Amino acid sequence: MIRRLSLRGRLSLLTALAVAVAVAACAVASWFLVRGQLYQELDRRLAAVGGLPGPLPGKGPPGDPAPRDSRRSWEFTDALEDCSPTATTTGARLRPPGPYEIMQLVNARGGPCTVPNAGSLTVAGADAQVARGERESAVRDGTGVTADGERIDVRVRTQRFMAADGTSGAVSFALGLDQVEEPLGDLALALAAVAALGVLAAAGTGLMIARASLRPVDELTAVTEHIARTEDLTTRIPAEGADEIARLSRSFNTMTAALAASRDHQQQLIADAGHELRTPLTSLRTNIDLLLRAEAAGRELPAEARHNLLVSVKAQMLELSSLVGDLLELARPEDAEPARETVALHEVAGRAVERAGLRGLGLRIETDIRPWYVTGDPASLERAVVNLLDNAVKFSPPGGVVQVRLADGELSVRDHGPGIPGEDLPHVFERFWRSPSARSLPGSGLGLSIVARAVTEGGGKVRLDPAEGGGTLARMWLPGTPERGD
Image (cartoon, rainbow, N blue to C red):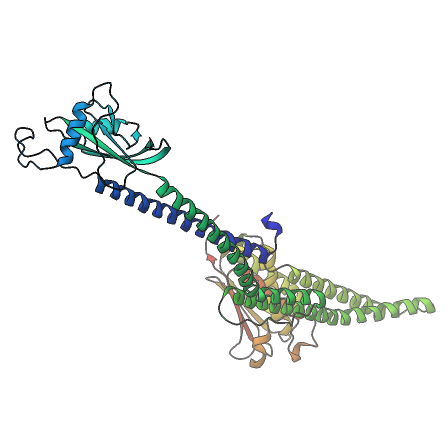
């Protein structure tokens, strides 16, 4: 049921519930505190009435060091002496002053001795213990009958006293509990009314607080709906302060900025890919058109010209295949978990040197390759090493030298080509970026991007620097060990 409510409704309801629980707890605690105070006051009044002295001087039990004088003690003594085991009333006229409603005597046998016009009480075990001298006093709740014959709930205090002959007895005084229950009932009604008003006020206050607190959320919702409707990722949410809503707004702005950048990169990738595909496709279409027109005209092309066209077609097809492969590699999500296994980097470098030797006819490749084992994706690492060597072969002059060295996890490839200008070095690992001097050469500008991605996934580093004496020095470092550790 609560889940179906809006966030504003849930906040209001939870606020009202919290206040209701707090108010109810305070009301209950207040009721019990007042109840305790009322009972204490009732007990104090009963104790003031029940303060009874002992026997007259010379009439007390032997050894009594401090006899006391009291006419009432003699009256109680006479009443107890007149109270036989079967008697329930005495003829003594006992009506001590005080604010009590019922008074009754209890003899040492635990029997009640009612006093005329003083009502009667049910004798409890605690009263009998006091009368026998086992306890000095006892306070309890009970029932009694007033002098008018009305049965009421009472608070009873029973106190021991000594008779003139040394026997003990007890006198019980009682006050009606209506002096406590009626104020408690009125207090309960008042507290219930205050609690209800407090809950209603809390609900209204909670609704206003929820509206004020959720206003930034409403603005955030409006912005997200606007972005979903218009796909305008440049929209920003005002984020002021350091509260949770401001943090959420800043996080949302960061997310939309990242989405906008991703969309821009995607559009740039499509545009760059289309541009790179246009050249080989145009050349391929031109060569095929020449072959088709020659066949349609019934004129055979010279064998050498036909061979050159087919070789060009094959080269363009290879370039397209390489470009598609590079695009597929870059299209793999960066957060996708690549394959992780032990790779012999020296073997990968050896195969890449063999392939580079086939492509760079007339070049001399000098190698110094030592064993090094790394953990990573074998296909991605091999493609990265091949791309580094392809770049060196591509930019090396005819008859030049390419130096390949692998030691302690660092693979270096050094060519003696024209080198890379210093202002171009920060851009060499960007997708589809090609220096002005290399735009006339085959390639898509994706090779070094693939190298950087493969090395980063393997936990390594790669960089290009101008080499001493001309050319470029590419260095790739990957963590690993010189011995295989499966």
